Length: 316
Length: 174
Image (cartoon, rainbow over all chains, first blue to last red; front, side, top):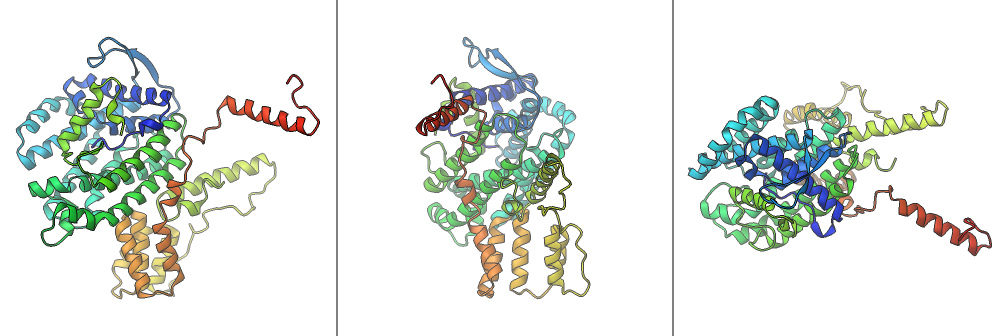
């Protein structure tokens, strides 16, 4: 995951922000139970995963005031021992692991190999706890590889594996059937949205490094990044907005028990704001979107959020 | 009722969930009303038990399958049809939309419209795809929760003022 799913901070109520932080810290602490290194991989998307699953559960999460390395003096509210945060932490670690492996295979990046080696002991534990999730992530990442090797020139086809991946990991496996079904459709559209936004932002980088990008593959002849963005803009806008519309509809059908204000902020304001920024700035290196946001960099971004007390990263 | 209206969720996987929710509401409603009014016209899943008519052309069969929700079967059959006319592209567009392949869905329906510009159904579907986003954008955020105690106080206060305007009084002390 890439850290694109965030609330629109200026529109958050203070209590909603506190709630958001407590889920975020909850996922981080849950990762810490595996090992300290895997906490470095936390992303904002994982916080969303925890919030949305927790929101359809009946139970009230236990909030405790705890200190951590980042906030050694002032205790912060943290959600502990909650199935949704535990699940989000597991998914977060799995995705980080597969991404590091992928980066090692593609770019022979030694740092990625080192990183994946550090997380590896954790992965077998998670694999035992959520075997189906492990399997589906592994399968879809493999499909993603095939798409890259094939050089697929269609946005819909290229985004399919990641959309499928998200549709399978967004619903917590023990939810009831209806919520799982709705969340799976929400996940599909969220995955597609993330993939397309990421590809659109990465046009410059991928062009330089000559790596696969569906937006580049679609265009014949050699064009500049600016031209490619311009040519793809309408289609990208249509796809992103269609995804947002379906995510919104899915939200309406969820059986929300809590956190509705926070979720509405993320779904109807945060995602929309991000979409407009990317479409207007084309992923330039200003604002909260970093055009150079290569995958490992996105991780670091998520991690920085954890290191900051007030999470200024969320502000956009 | 409006929230779960199937038209709003038409054409995707959510349609069936919305129908189930509506069904529940309908049942709860008839139970509350204490009469067996389940015969009332409800948005039920009328298409589920669709019988395929053997006298139909393949394209007509695909259309029926789509309306019965058998998108997978419909796609299989559609792929075996070699005549690619406007109807073919239109139906393929509908199937693609249901899969979440929005861009290709739109270009297929666009193609159908180009081939047969007079067909109102093709045109309205294309418009539906293009305006799918409007609902998301017009949704009021943060104003949907009604669990606010202040609302109750404010409503009572307004009611009192209105009563006083008309010479009466709702709350004696103020």
